[in-house]
Length: 325
Ligand code: HEC
Ligand code: HEC
Image (cartoon, rainbow, N blue to C red; front, side, top):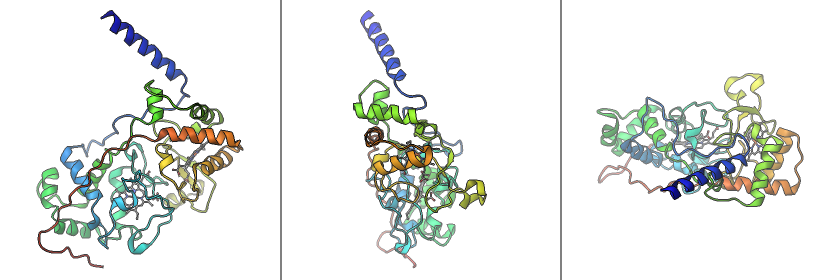
C-alpha cells in the first residue's frame, strides 16, 4: 500500500518535472472534441456519416467522395497541390486534412464555415468538387441509393435531407482524431523525443512561432496576415481590405504527413515551409541547423490515426444507379 502511494507520488513529481520543460502554450491533444448540442454523437450516426463520407453518389459523376480528396489512407489529404474534382478540374486551394478537424473553431483556410456541419454542405454542391445541381439532387440520389432506412434509424421517419446528411458526416469527422503523437507521450512522461526535436521545440517558442502556433492543434485558431502568394484569403469572404492575405493559422498536427503546404500548396517540403514562415512572419533567417531541429520537432506531432474499416454502402438490388451527367 505504502509502496503504491510512494510510486504514485513519484510519478506525480516526474510528470510535473516534465511539464516544466515544455514551453508554455503547447498542449496534449485531448481524446475527444467539442460536440455541438444539436448534433450529439451516436454509434449509428457515426456509422451513417462514415458511409456518406465514402459515398460517390454525392458527386455528379458518381466518382468523387469526400475520401477522394481527404483520403483516410493518407492522413486525410491527397498530397496534391490542388485536388482533382468534377471533370478533372482543379480548385485553387490545397485540401487540408480532415484529421482533428473537430478541434477547429472555424473551417477552411479562410474560416468561412464555422462548424463541420456547415462545412459538409459545401463540397457536394461546389462545381469544381462534386458538382451536384442542388440539395434536392443530393437527397434524390441518397434515396435512390437506398439510404431511407439508414437515415430513419438515426434521425426518424422521412429524414433524408441535406441537413441530416451534413450532421452525420460531421459526427463521423469528430471521430477522426490522432492522439498519442510522440510529443504527447513525451509531455505526459510516457515517452521521449530526440534531442534535435527537443531543441526544435524550444526554438519555436524562443523565436515566436508559438505566438500563432499554440494550443492543442498548435494553432491559436485565429486569422493572421500571411503576405505570400496571390490568394486574398479572408478578404475573398469579407471583401474588407484589412482581411487581405489573412489566413487561419494552420495546425502542426500530422503536418509531416500532409505535404504539400500552404493554402496554395506551393511549398513541397517542411524545410521550405519553416524557412518561409520564419522569414515572412518573424523576419528571421534560420540556420540550416535550426531548420533541421524544428522539422525534427514537427515530425513528433504525427499521431495515431484511427483504424477505418471500409464501409459497405447501400445500393439498390439488381439495377444500376442513374448518374445523369
Ligand atoms: C475535389 C476535392 C474535395 C472534395 C471532393 C471534398 N473536399 Fe473538403 N476540402 C477540399 C479543399 C480544396 C479544401 C480547402 C478549401 C478552402 O479552404 O477554401 C477543403 C476543406 C475541407 C475541410 C476544412 C478543413 C480545415 O482544416 O479547415 C473539411 C472539414 C472538409 N474539406 C471536409 C470535406 C467533406 C466532409 C467532404 C465531402 C462531403 C469534402 N471535404 C469533399 C477539397 C475537397
Ligand atoms: C503571425 C502568425 C504566425 C507565426 C509567427 C508563424 N506562423 Fe506558421 N502559419 C501561420 C499562418 C497564417 C499559416 C497558414 C498559411 C497559409 O495560409 O498558407 C501558417 C502555416 C504554417 C505551416 C504550414 C502548415 C500547412 O499544413 O500547410 C507550418 C509548418 C508553419 N506555419 C510553421 C511555422 C513555424 C515553424 C514558425 C516559426 C518559424 C511559424 N509557422 C510562425 C501563421 C504564423
